[in-house]
Length: 97
Image (cartoon, rainbow, N blue to C red; front, side, top):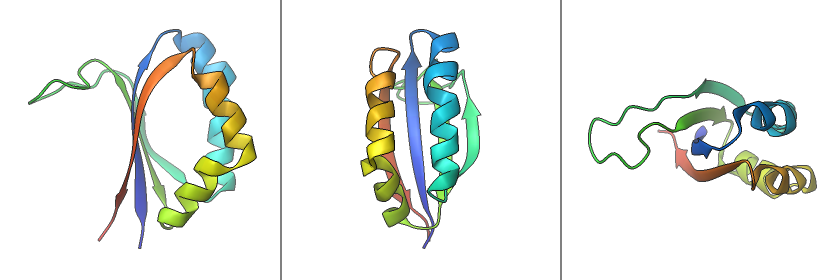
């Protein structure tokens, strides 16, 4: 069953984030079977406001296991360290029907 990784990010330095993290992360997403559905700044909350103004990324994957292999890979572990000072992120998995 397909699964989705949903990320809300408060990005501190968008230029560095895109060049140092976003570009290499995009290559890894594809390598591990994911595809981006949405990558956009400017979340507008209709209720709750928790992620208002942040950026959102939604990617579709073949299954939850593919996300977990990506997330726990040595390559992505290195990129998470690059990302840490550039953005505060909330990351979740939602399995599809």
